[in-house]
Length: 468
Image (cartoon, rainbow, N blue to C red; front, side, top):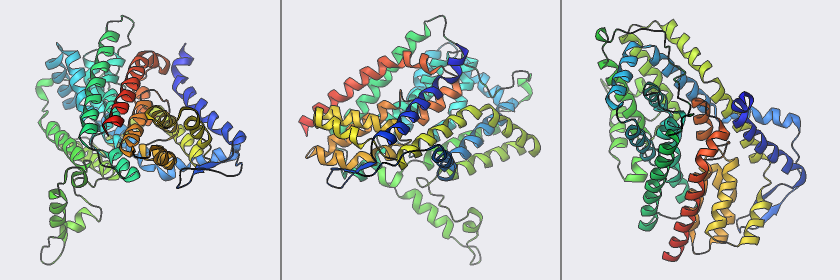
C-alpha cells in the first residue's frame, strides 16, 4: 500500500511515456499539412540515449519553471519560519474555523476566477502554500485542500475567459469569442464549481479522509503572538500578490487597457539631469502590468524575501538555508515535473499520434465529440494548451468547416477536462505531490466530476453548433 501511495502518479506518467516510446517503433512519424491531410514520414524509433538527451531539454527550454518552483518553495519555507506568518495564518484560521466549507468554496472561486484571466497558470501556485497553511490549521482533509486551491486552478483552466489559452485559441483558429460562448464558459465554471463543491462536501463526511499537513512548517517553534507584529508581512504580502496578479493579466489585448503600458513607458523614459535613471535601475525588461514573465515573478519573490528578512531581522545565511530546506521539501513535485517534460519532448520530437487522430475522425466523423476527444488525447502529451493544440490544429480547422468557433471552444474544453485526470498535467501533478495525495484515491474522487463535465461540455458544444 505504501508503495502504491508513493509511486501512483509516477507510474501513470511512466505508462504514458512508455506508450509514446512504443508508438515510435510501430507507427511512422506524421504530422498534418496545411490542408489537414496526414503526411507520414519515416520511422524514427526512440532509443535509450535519446531519452537521456531529451530528458535534459526540459532544463534548457523550461528552466524558468524549475527556477520558479525552487524560489517558491524557498519563499514559503522562509515565511513559515517567521513568527508573524504563524500569527497571521493562525488568526485567519480562527476567523473562519466555524465555516471551513465556506472558506473552501470561496477559495476555490478565487483560484478559478483568477486562473481564467491570468496569462500563466503557474502564477496561481504563488498562493497555494498559503492556502495549505490555513487548511492545515483548520484540520481539513487533503481533498478539501485540493479543491480549495488546485481544484480551483483546474476549473479556471477549463473555463478560460481571458487567459493565455484564449489568446492561443484566437490566434490558431482566427476566431473571437462571441456572447453564447462566453456565457457558456461562465456557466461551465459555475456548474463545475458547484459539482466539485458537492463532491468535496460528500468526501469530507468520510471518517478515513486524511488530514492535510503543511510540510513547510516547523511545528516545534513556539510563538508569543502578543510580541509579534504582522503589519509588515501583510503589507509586503498584499503588494506582492497584487503585483503578481496585475502583472499577468493581459490588460491590453483582453480588456483594451493601455494605461499600465503607458505608465511604464513614462517611468522608464523619464530622466533626471538628462539621465534615464529609472531605466537603468529597473533594467531593460518591461515592468508594465500585463507584460510580466515568470522570470519577473521570480525577481519579485526574491525582493519580497529580502525586504521581509531585513524587517524581521533574519540573517542572509539563514534565508539561504531556509530556501534549500524548501527545495528539499518540494523535491518530489519538482522531480515529477522533470519526468513530465521528458514525456513532452519525446512526443514532440517524435510525433506519431496523427494516425490515431485521423482514425477517430474517419470512424466517428467531424463533430463536437471527436474534436473534444482528440483535444483530450493531445492534452495527455502536451504541457500547455498551445503545445496541445498546434499539432492537431490543421486537422481540426479543415474538419470543422464553418464551425471554427465551436471547434476552437471544443479544444479549450477538451484540454481543460483532461487536466483533471491526466497524471501528465503539470497543475494536477504539482497539486497531488505537494499535498501528498494518492493518485488512485484522487481518481476515485474526481471521476464523477470528469464524466459529468465531459457530457455537459459536449452538450454545450452541440447546442453552440446549432446556434452558430
